Length: 338
Image (cartoon, rainbow, N blue to C red; front, top):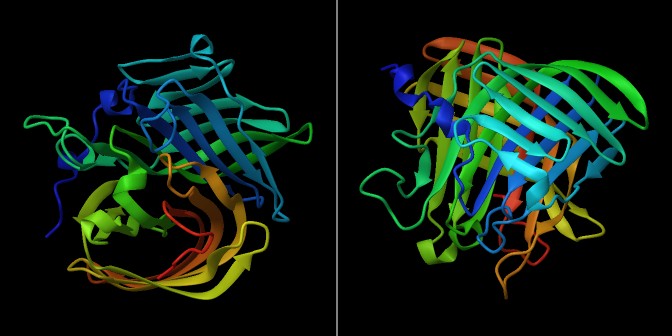
């Protein structure tokens, strides 16, 4: 049974600022010339309610040889603004704006910057009826909630600026908008997140565990799109096995250079083997948890994805480069990756 794609489409206001204790707009891209981009545009401290006045733009650009440039300028409230009707935010002279099917981001930092246009090739998606993975915004409302509005795949073009040089780029990328008032540190133990771009299909997934107080229950989500439209959305049938574990020497955080995902759903089954190429956001704590807890360890990387799948009765075999992330909310500088 193929899903009704219109049921999952977000409204323009879903991409707007919701005046929540924390929100961010995320943009990534892997480019044909070997460069890659990761960026988050923050209103509120990411994942916690401790500093709703925090404003920053976190940008990482990786080069073809695997070097990473990271910038995160901080802004005051009077230097920033955001629309409550659509995606239109300003952080100083920097901005993220747009809506389906076209988005623009402009950034200048001490070490580089970018001017990029995202042109959606898939519809946007969100958990009906209000985008909440946890809790509800609509009636009957819950006291706490966390939302995730996703635009799974775009053609991306424009330029990067690295070392004073302007570099024309084109490739593919992903964008989303998240907001909430629940502490992600208290809610999740870890998650593995990513997207897989196939010739005619797009897969976007989470695979992780809730925190101890929720009994480490599994947290799984997967969107499957064919061409522009959603054909399936499931909350199980994703299994991840890690191997080739290495230790980052400075922070002593472990990570897997190889992951094998098995998909077993009514619409799709088979495997995707992910082999890490290089980091885009280097593995290190990127923010502190609530007082008295461990920091959050977070990393993103470009990987080569070798897919051997059957989707809706069609054999699909392809290799593509994609962006993946690993987030661990409570750790002792050692990540559990299975």
